[in-house]
Image 1 (cartoon, helix red, strand yellow):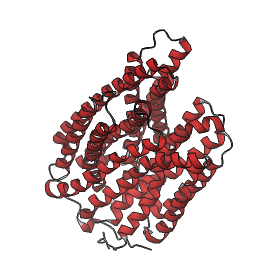
Image 2: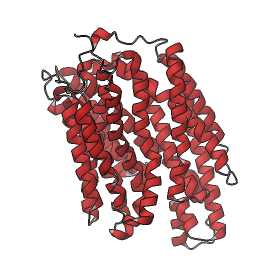
Image 3: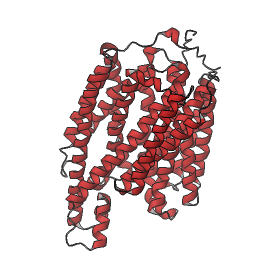
Image 4: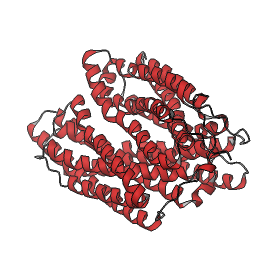
Length: 505
């Protein structure tokens, strides 16, 4: 292959991708702030409120792998431009939806745009950057993925206080417009690899399998692990994905090359990144409830209180860049999981009387741990990908993280809810009031009884502490796996293995 031609504008190209990714992070959390408003403005039921989020998640899960394959076949630039257009139009459709059904459909369309933007932008890191630059590029890419998460409640809360609810989706449009211009001017037009055929059976099996698995985990989180829909969805997902593995071994050009898993860097980089995502998404599920139900924060304050996670990630990622250079990714990941274990263990001693200052300390520490863990793990997995499989390989990494995050919310949500309900004192309350209080700490506090409010807060903190101990155990497993299976030192691919990437073509 031809040696890579590095253009100084590749960092501007990364900036273009980052703008595109910020809107995805914003969209993930801005909806949560608006749910009470949507319930009244659109007369949406509880089930419809859940589907505002689930429609997005399920479409995203089903299309990640096909999006990666199409990126490899046709080149990522055109598909990213198309995905941004879809994302912008879907955002406008969300903003002007007049019924729950319209909003659910528009949210599904947002999932289509995200399913292409996430893996294709990640695959470009393999094409644009030399091996020694990818750690820094991956760090910036992950920051762009993450920074929108706390900004969603901040911007959403402010917009809901001043404008119609549809404004929370219209904020995507300026960023999409800038992203379109930047991608068109700065992202290279790579030719793709047309020799790869479209694996239609593989697409159908993995799409149906990931949707079923994700749906099962969502149902388990909302209805409990005894739900027929949860068990059926998970079982169907496992069967369909197992069928895909059998198919992939027999076909000559499968959707996902299972040979990638022969690389320790790809396999354990993906597994450990998924475990870190499990803990991070679970934490982001727990913290807003702590801030609002126990510490009395509103939506805007909740977003601001999440910022230490991002600040910690920035600090950790910067330190990890140097540590990886000196000692390798394995050491950085072990340090990251050690810091995660420490931060989560401190958080597990949270009491009702602890203020935000105590929370900020251990939350920041967990944020630092994510910075030490995720960029090196994603970088290690990405480095194992051949250029012609950058899209499909990146999509596989992201699909695993997506499933891990959904599983994290389901499992940790179940642990939290069970501990909360077992600890909550509803003695002497009317059955309807007791049932409402058992739904969540926020519902218990909203009832307004001083005794129930105190009990709900104590029960939630008790449940959160148990949940954090579960995450602490996961961090310990991460340390063991990293020490046992990660390569001691990784040698980046030689430059001559890379293809030409001419910016602005």
